Length: 238
Ligand code: PXP
Image 1 (cartoon, helix red, strand yellow):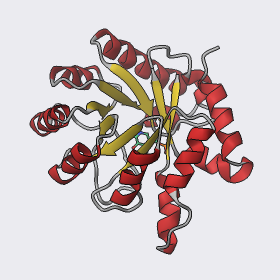
Image 2: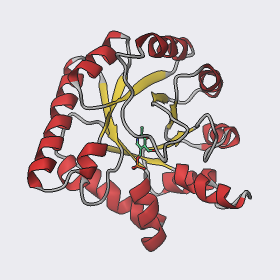
Image 3: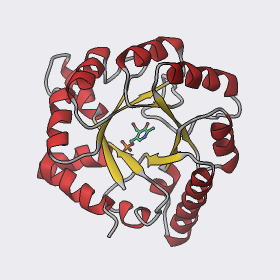
């Protein structure tokens, strides 16, 4: 399973002082040296963490791959088409939320999302839709030519007790299998950490995980190299 690192939180820390350190671009370059398979950033409409300068520099400097999380709105689609990430992941976005709260409702927003996919495809960019582990949403994603889905793993990450954990993991497994059958690439993310990855890695249909908070938090204690090494080891299928 590939492991891509989301560096939004480094930008949050930088912006807390309104100055230039810690720099998420430098951090991303170090993360690449320590073996992550890609860098993920979310360019939000309100620019609360990552800004356009960060994305442009990342585009220029990283040598793995850039996954740009974004809302399906014209302003950000224009920037994505210009910057050319390897992957654009379309997420729902609400100004009031602390972080992305769940998958996008593809069915209810099909025209807007289809338009975004078409524009990104015209610019040569592969597109992933961040969705709940829900068969109908995945069918809709395939229908409008998404290349990948990213399964929202927040409910799995929040599950308490063996039964709930098993049920949520099973939902993700069934969704991932279904998406694979439809020919979609399958990524996953949100709330994955050093504990819940142990079971999660058994879902062989998942190609890639996108992880931010747990790895950045662990890096504070053990350093970035060690935090990345531990997560890489977990993501490896034995
Ligand atoms: N995937 C998506 C679409 C997200 O919005 C986020 C949160 O920024 C993540 C993955 C990573 O989540 P976490 O920071 O909980 O690892």
